[in-house]
Amino acid sequence: MFLAADKFFQELMGIRSCALTGHVGSGKTLGAIAIACELLRRQFVSGVWGNLNHSLPHSESLERSCIILDEASIVMDSRWSSVCFDLYGSFVRKYKGVYLYPSVHQVDKRARNLEVMRLVDIDTIPFLRTWVYRWESTSGAKGTFFLLRPQEYFDYYDHEFVPTSDGGTLEALCSMYPETVNEILESRSGKRLQRLMGYDTGSRSGGSRSVSGSVVSGLSERVERLEAELENVRMMVYGLTGNIESTSNGASQGEATAIERWRA
Image (tube, rainbow, N blue to C red; front, side):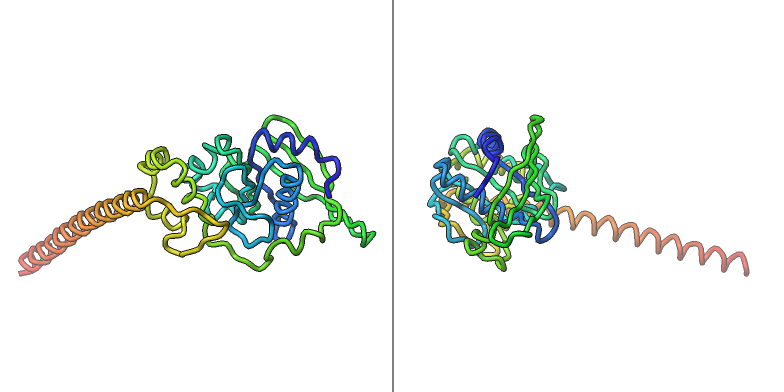
């Protein structure tokens, strides 16, 4: 149950994404689950999509979904910020979705337009345990809200599950906007995105829709071209290295011969 959270949810629905930050065990994923429950209760979304195992109503598509990317830095690391956020964040208003990014490590700065962090765990009264969260947005708005009895959300998700992909989110976006997504993928590393979409790991969750054959084929062709170009570069480097070594060896032999002649 939330208290004093109306302003936060108003800001969330305006920005449509929220990063939940903090140290290990600080209530990030549980906070995301609780926010998703509240979004469902307020009928802002009709289901939950995610890369974690949960028992909330599952979405069959991203439309009107709360998308939870647990440990989001595995797909949106701040050190390669432009790779995937163009795909995750660009169309969210079109399909009326809301993204939640609980993560220990920092995610793409554009995903941090609204940030939430748990400040205090008040457990002096067992039946009225309360978590206090602080939130702030890049618009300058900020505040505090309270989550009462957070233990009521413990059973809604698998605490031991380790996400290995984005749960099929990019795949679903490919199905929804194939032409636009293909344009974005033209300038991206196909192999990296393929792994995040689960083709290498086979990881799926959230009832994702299968990507069209043309999109998969296009991605595969791009990956093959990239790998071929990389192999050509490697061969050029090896060739240059070999020439340098032969030149160096030749110079060394020449010097040795000159020294022997001088001694004679």
